[in-house]
Length: 374
Image (tube, rainbow, N blue to C red; front, side):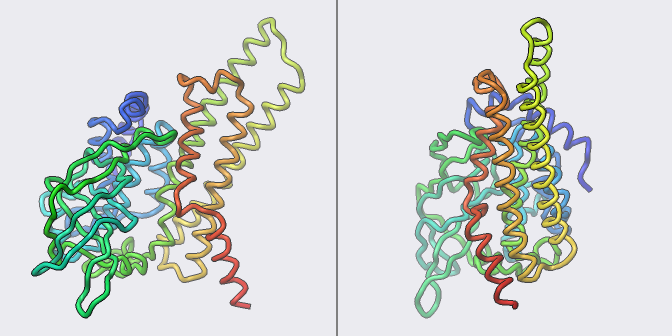
């Protein structure tokens, strides 16, 4: 089972290293190691390799806990767990390549197809570049999405496993938010041979039908849980933002009470903003907790899957609204680069920009299924 003390250590370390991670635009080695030690990399790893085969509820709650200290560190932890789950879809040979020595291997991945694969005896030769691989500096392996040729013609989108020794890192991560995630670009300077046993079709991940795992956490369709990976850091970021906002507001009130005065309108505005933002955060947490519980309790059907997608997107919309309200009512000082509130604000907006959290497709998918069932 995950060790709560290790999780607390990661959270404290993430807070201490947040400024350096943001300045360097990648996690520090100490935080990356703490992510492993806290159990994120092994959380969804099959038990036969020493993994936890864990729950989505622990994943949600623990990622949010880290994000309250530093959303970027939580994003890296979330990706470590998420890509560990994806590696569970590899055939036995691929799983052995990742976890034969220990279950805490860090895997990063490119979810969008890229690169080029040509057929070779027993596998493929893979070449190209893939952007936005969070935590790449500290990874042991990468799962890269690419269309590959199949017998009889045509192509199939697959994930292909490559070791750290095969790729180089190009510094391309210069963003407004989630700066400390180190989501740089992977480059294969030479074609890499990937055997069939180190690959799986994207379709089996979407359907939740792995070849070599019976763990429940691998039998969940991707769309039922993919939004949790990116909503969980945003949820925890609001906890951090509320703490920072409350501290700022309390300081302002103390200053005003000391002689500058404070109008009733100002006090009311602050009180209403805090209550509303906290309520929106609570509502988002309830939506995400239900989605995680659904994934843990059973293999979600179509109705639960579309509801989960709706709830992932709706929860993050609530979080964006909440953090916007906090920044708008926190005064000019909160926009200083030295104030943590503006970092939480940037990080929530960066998380909300992920494609799986778009509201319109999630809402329309949910509504279409509801209307078709009538």
